[in-house]
Image (tube, rainbow, N blue to C red; front, side, top):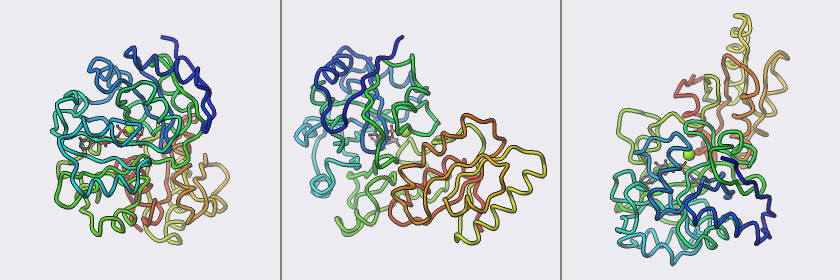
Amino acid sequence: MQTKYFVVDKDEPDLKMMEEAARLLKQGGLVAFPTETVYGLGANGLDSEAVAKIYKAKGRPSDNPLILHIANQEELVPLVTSIPANAQVLMDTYWPGPLTVVLERSRLVPDIISGGLDTVAVRLPGSKVARQLISLAGVPIAAPSANTSGRPSPTSAQAVLSDLEGRIDGVVDGGDCYIGVESTVVDCTTPVPTLLRPGGITVEMLIETLGEIEIDPTLGGSVECAPKSPGMKYTHYAPSAPMVLFEGRYSRIEDFMLEEIQRALEMGKTVGAIVSAETAQRLPENLIVAIYGQRGQTAEIAANLYTALRSFDDYSVDVIYAEGIDEQGLGLAVMNRLRKASGYKIIKV
Ligand code: TXA
Ligand code: MG
């Protein structure tokens, strides 16, 4: 299949192109589109056959449910059985934006969206291109990140094409995603809402809005308990080579990483490193280096993270060493993704 390519301005998308992309969706096709977090792979969320194509194109396990994307808050009502007060507060505060709420689903939501759960995840994205596409399609749009399952999420149309070209009907290129990590997923069916996936809306923000928040125990990195967000149990966000993550204080990480890198080089390995600009200055020359940003500039690091992880695809590195960051603010989402990308191969220093 030929993947149609539509380039649009992110603030004033060309209506003709958007209509053409929406038509592909209405016909049951798959169209990737930008959101402020990552690119999504969209299909008509009320059409089980169209949604089945998403799982096929991505190679995604069928028990991993999808997020339905809407363009206006009112479109949530027919998709759920009720809207708890907490959920309403969250939506009023953070929609449109990088927040996904999990609620009891109505019968309108096809089983294939929910992977057998009684709930549905819904998000109203901030990106204008995304909202306009959803509006023009006239239905909720099911959209996981537009990557091959297990790979880092795409934050540019180029990254979408490198995974899915020829497997999807179209991609709308609205430039790079400015947040760069996925939306925060909050389960609002529990008395106190539960954080299932850290993302663009930080825990600090959620606590400020709600007063308190439960944290799903599996987010600590323990893989023993069954995750409530089914997607969290799979290897994810991983670059093409095995990755080892260093966690701890900056100064200690730097020293331990340098030692480990030296050892790998002496063994004749081709080594990659994903690091801050500061650490990059201390690295030996014969490495493949991806810089994610300046230390402490967490928003910049989040925005660059997936491109940095994907940059190793062009080289055959034997091992990648990653520099961990502080977990405050967006740092929690960044560390969650780095831990998963490493398959929990973590060196605490
Ligand atoms: O930022 C984002 O959320 C992006 C953009 C495209 O909107 N989408 C995205 O979708 O990241 P995906 O499929 O890659 O991740 C959805 C996450 C998964 O961890 C999935 O398990 C969880 O949301 N999820 C979906 N439905 C759920 C439900 N009913 N209950 C609990 N978790 C759910
Ligand atoms: Mg994903």
